[in-house]
Length: 327
Image 1 (cartoon, rainbow, N blue to C red):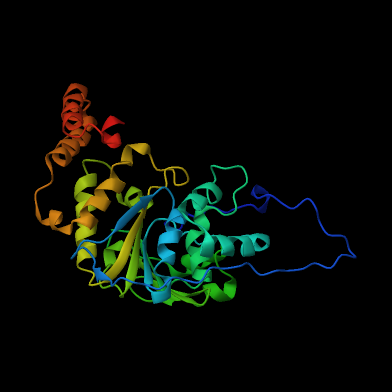
Image 2 (tube, one colour):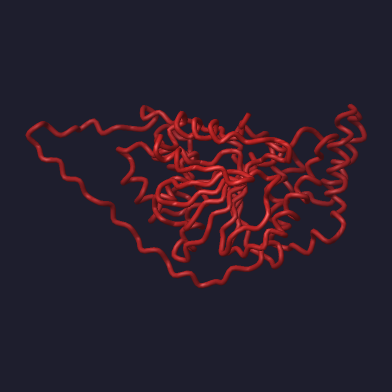
């Protein structure tokens, strides 16, 4: 069964409505939002994990939108590693306001208006990718599913049905998706979409922007015995390294608030940014604290609390300002 399309549907009642509705005799003026022009792209893409690349960490994918906007004029591909595609539709009555947010707002605005943590959000993180596809930021979307089993068979019929049932696509849009082993390809919002399981990840288009949501690792992770998290991170990064893509920037979302991802994984985001900013580290032995952390996570399965505590105290001594160690 295809079980990686986890979509959180958004009710229109979550959003505020205008209490001053026009009367039947009052003409409704529909004004288009004032949109800032897309900036010129001043940098060149670099080989992913071949050369250092800027890696920007935020809470939600919506916070990455101002970063994506900086490179939208180059029409890169968006490579998305996530369990959730963030393609939930924006309510029709909010489309123009969201468009103004997409083109004009900065990161702090998205923190305040694009989160379920506030009472009256303008958009939700689950709408992030759809909103930028609708704005024309990307030439194509490559969605990498967290599916590591090479023997698993993805069902095209189930995938199409889930697109329709979730409201992501109409029936006609869902029918554009065809089997393209491994995975599917189709069109949504006039944008080419390619859906690939992680087990089938090979070459990726250039130029690209890479976005990693921690839900990707949550779906691949079983436990520290079967799928220890540190080696899993190195494996994913090394696979991306061989994808032969060049990228402008990488963004990462923790999704602790909306993705049901435990705060115990808060170290994953900074660890990813560290390796992306200095890819040569992948060819070196893990740092002493990474080795201690890996051992602590492993020993925790055997209830060796004193040994685990000793390792964390050693980690704190080496990195007293690291919030993940404190936690």
